[in-house]
Image (cartoon, rainbow, N blue to C red; front, side, top):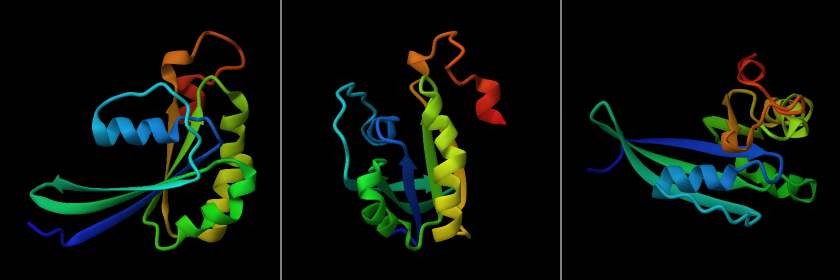
Amino acid sequence: MNPKHTIRITVVGDGDTGKTCMLIVYKDKKFDDRYVPTVFDVYSMLIPINGVEYKVILSDTAGQEEFDKLRRLAYKDVDCFIVTYAVNEKTSYENVFLKWAPELKRFSPKAKIILAGTKMDLRRNRPSHITTEQGKS
């Protein structure tokens, strides 16, 4: 069956927030805990939804500032962004609102945005860690 629909999703967020791990777990169904910084990667897969096959193109981007211009190339024709933050890193959560949301609205104002908290296994009951309630707000 050839897919009649394509969905383009770009994943953004601060460096070391688990973007690559999240995508690899989704794609390969396995977890690798080694940190390998990504500059840019693209994963493509076919996903059936209600009997219709979709081609999903997932772009994995670098969160570091030195890759700002390169990362923005992945914003063209995006249907949806997944913005990640690490629940054990308050700065990454703050940057969702200070950096990522404004950047995405500027370069791709029509794209949908999904917020994803990562590294749930590393969250402790520390004041600096992001709670579920904060993530939902």
